[in-house]
Amino acid sequence: MMNLPSDDVKSILVAAGLSLTFGTNLFVGLEPATPVNCVTVYDTPGSKPDSAFDKSNIYNPSIQIKVRNNSYVAAGILINQIKDSLHNISNEAWNGTNYILIQCSQEPFSLGPDVNGKHQWVCNFDLARS
Image 1 (tube, one colour):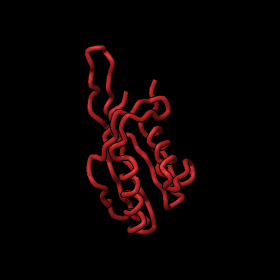
Image 2: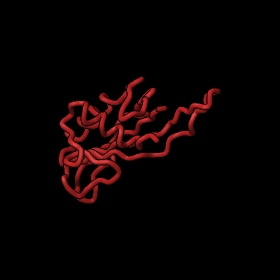
Image 3: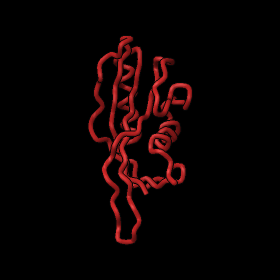
């Protein structure tokens, strides 16, 4: 059984050298109230699996990464660093799952401030894994 895509991407981000630490400023599935400056990885709907003639499947999930920060500029810089770290990863194994390709599906964009006036940026990624 494969891990959730969000869990594997969390591991990739920790290894990427972006000063992200799981449980401190990097979270999966639920954005905490604190710390204000944080990154959260969410599983989102992908496309259907591709079936090969040998009955192996290539799964096509997607994820969304959200950066929240006191600073609009700092949030924008970090989401772009995350995009650059993940976009075009190919043929790498993470936590026992082979990632054929990770691609950014659009450029990062601002969601505007949250109810507390904190800046929010997101970026979505399509994954192919087996």
